[in-house]
Amino acid sequence: MPTTGSVDTLTQVELIWTEKKIEHWIRFGEGAGERILDRHRRIVSFAPGSIFAFVRWASNDYGTILSRIDIARAVDPHEPHQTLPFVRPGGDILLTIQGWHKVERVLQIIDAVEALGINPVDVAPNHWRHVHNRLTARHKPRVYTHTRHRAWLKRRRATP
Image 1 (tube, rainbow, N blue to C red):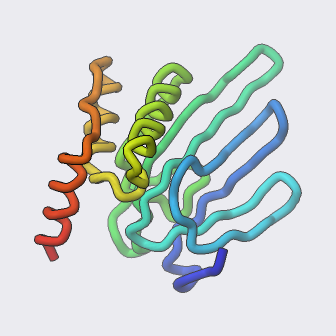
Image 2 (image 1 turned 180 degrees about the horizontal axis):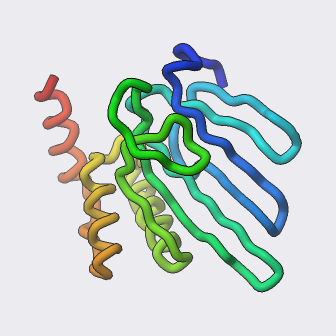
């Protein structure tokens, strides 16, 4: 991936893969650059405003100890943001879910958006917040539709 923008303005996400122990990966998002650190680690960079989904999974001898997905918007370094492990400087967190059953549900929701022919990075950020809130409250989130997506695109064009 070609790098666009200064390294100082990019959000950097550290991805790790150690078979059957630790896996960090990007489920969706359009990276602005990539740097390989070693056989098990690499850093993917995102330009300010980019939306990405970051999945973390870890296990030990007894099974899964961590399952988590975060959907975040990359921020300008001077913009207010929340901290997020393995993400520098952090991001505007739209969704954060822990526990395999909930993470699996978010992955299914992402798959459903892609089945509509919509790139998840283009989904209204408030939809990811809605999914977070509904799943946290143990309720079923509303389905993202072409009608909702068209409304979001019109709203985005209308606001500077």
